[in-house]
Structure formats: C-alpha cells, structure tokens
Image (cartoon, rainbow, N blue to C red; front, side, top):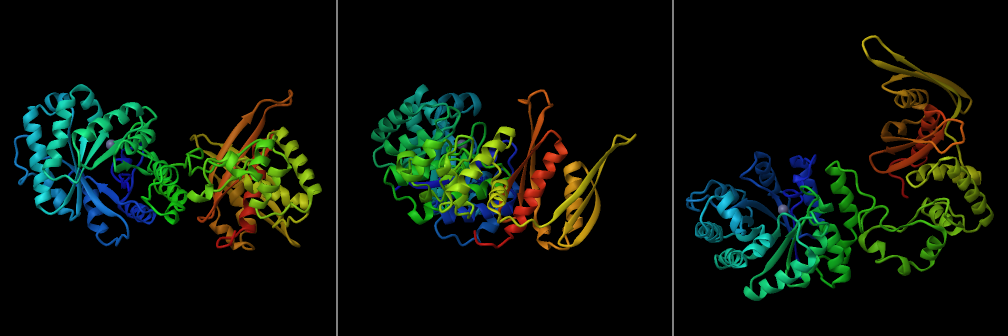
Length: 523
Ligand SMILES: [Zn+2]
C-alpha cells in the first residue's frame, strides 16, 4: 500500500499569489484527513511564526487518518544537531512525524552550502539520528536527488544511505527542479532500490516538464511506496505533483488500496474545497475532478456516451465524485439536450416535440452569440419558458441607466428600474460603480422586500466578450455573470448590441434562478 504524504500546506503555498491563513490550513487539513491521506505536512516551523500557530492549534484537530508532520532541514554546517535551533523548533511542534531535507547533489553541497561532502554526510547522519533518538518518525527528503544522481550517483547514494542508516523511515527522492522525465525516474528508482535493499523509498516530483504525476506513478511502479504531492498540484513555478490525479490512478488503475472507494468519492469535493479556500479559480479541465473532465460535446459522441459511457469515459465519474455532463452546443443532438435537461431536473424524455423545439431555439440563440456552456441557469430559465412552466418573479416595465464622469475623475452610475410584482408597481433608484452594479442595486431595492432570499445572492464574477462576427450592424456583446448564494454557484448569459441590455438579461436570469432555487433546496 502506498503512503500518501500531502504537502499542500507547505510546498503548495509556494504557489505565486497563494496564501493560507491558519484557519484555512486547519480546514484543509480536516478535508485531507476525510479523504484518507496518511500524512499532512503542516509547514516549516523554523521559517515562520504562522506555522508555529498552526502546529499548536492542529493538536486539537483529532484527525481520523492523517498524522500532521513538520518540515525542516538538517542541522547547520559545523554545528551539533542537539543544539540546533531548527531541529529544536521541529521537536517543539510536538509532531510525531518529521520531515527534513538535505542536499544530495554534490555541486549544491560545495557551491551553495560551501561545505565539504563529508560534512554534509555528517549533518544528515547527526540530524536524523538525533530526531529518531527523540522518538520521532523521520522522513528524509533528498533534495535535487535526480540531478545529483545524474551528476554523481555515488555521492547521491551515500547521502541517502547515510540517512537510512541513521534511522530515517523513508528516503524521499526529490525532483526539486522538476525537469526529469519518466523514463529516467523509472530507471533510477529501479537501480537505486537495488542499491539500498529494504529501505522505504518515496517520490517528490515537481511539474516543470509536465511530468510530475507521470513521474510519481512510474516511481511507484519501480518500487517507491511513499508519494508526496499537493492538492490540485499547487506549488511553486509549474506546481507539484497533483495528489488528486495520483490517488485515483493508484486506486482505480494500479490496484493500490491507499484510500477506500468511499474516500475516493470525496475527491472532486476536496479539490473544489481546497481551490475555494485558497481563492484559486478551479480549473474546469483538471483531470478526474474538473467540471469538464467528463463533459461531452458533439451530437453523435454525446448520444453515444449517454448509452455507452465506458466507451467514452476512462473511469466511472461517480468513482471520484464527479459527474458526466453534456455540453449543450450547436452540435448537440436531442439526446444530449434531454440529458442536460434531466441534470437540471426537467424531464423531456416524454416530449420529444418540446425537445426539438428547445433545440431549435438554442441553435438560433447560439447563432446570435449566446453560449450556454457556462450558463446552465439561463438554459434552465429558457427551457421552462419553452415548456410554459416558467413563473417570473417580477415583470419589467422599464429601466434607465445614467453615467456621469466628474471633474475629479470619479465615474458615477445611477440606475432606475420600474417593475411589477403581482399587481404592485415599484420604482427604485440606486448608485453603483458601474451599470451592472447600479442595476443590481436598484432591482434589489425594488423587489427585495418581496423576496428576502435575494439577500443571500451575490454576483461573483462578470465577464464581457465582444463578438465581432456581425454583419455590419455593430459588434455584439456577450455578458456572462456568475452568481452564488454561498451554497452553490450558477452562470447566466445575455447578448445584445448594447452592453447594458446584455448585462440586464444575464442579471435577470441570475435573480430568477436564484429565487427559484433557494438555499437548502434538495437538487
Ligand atoms: Zn518541493
């Protein structure tokens, strides 16, 4: 069984622009524990006080599966392990398991560390032995192992052998620069495991050559039983090995039982949770867990996929908690529309005539510039209108939008909407930093007292695209709005030659959908 070692909270946070608070880290640790990861590296206590707070508070987490580990380096050149501040900080975290890195590439020892090769071996030996004598499980990260092994295999091997003999539980072979290719990793791990029989080996890969996941999998195939990676592959430069791609490959394709099938079904949710917590937009095309990972576009293909999913899907999406999804597009046939409608809770199977009518409508709208791939909510509103089941929450009489640029450089927008709810007519005016913001404000003022659920609905993203493939009538603007009520997110779309009109369309669909599906609703 492979041991899974997550380093999202340490190596993952090296990603440019990513920062996690202590609370974020604790929340992520909990989810990784639910997923069944065996070790969660919490941080580098010697390097920053935030990590110290994490370790203090992590003691109360009461995890079911995972052991929290702390990360650090070997003792200083010329200094004793017993009195080393960094090693002391590691012990003070109270973690049962610790991971320290040491140099395995001779050039780094002599040129970066300015130490002799023998002194580096001493530092590795004394540091590991000291932490083991203190009763801790110690993993040794052999930094720059693959480059070091290529340059001087004898020395790289000595460093690892030294750590193993001093009591390290696993020797982790790091592709620190991330440029090694899978065939090299496979060959080196094979050779190396023969040179160090009985030693548990691990792999820590970076994605600079787009091979981090492949390198981790071939390393396992060649004998590594400990894999380090991060959720969603977050990490410095091109990222770390994506543990959320490695895990399903291990379980579903390589027959490893590192986590249970129940735990594996949490994969997609964990991926999105970590992305949202780290404030990184989830990548829809991420293997296994992306919203497009099992999306089928194209009529023939989509209808075949509906009948014969194994022919078009490399795994059952449900195994990783994902869903097969049909992308509605000009190419889509009736079968895919029927599936898509079912996903939205609308059964078209009994009414093929309606399905054909809706499909024609979609094709017409796509021709005008609409796109529904990120606008399920508009599609739902449209389907209901076509089927005569749409119940509008309000009716627009008119809206007006004014923009004023002032001498001091400020730009103010003011919007007025006139709407009817039932028999009542409401007029409301609001200011905003732009037309959409102002219209949104005015609409909320006008109908908010009827629909308190509006309070929870927020516009979270707004994208504008100018489509110029028109026939001399001026460019058409497409507006995509993403909304959220804190529980779910939905997308809507509007298209017009006038950007404010396009925005209004998307805004109205957003509100209609949000009110039709209040929080807590079973979907
Ligand atoms: Zn790393």
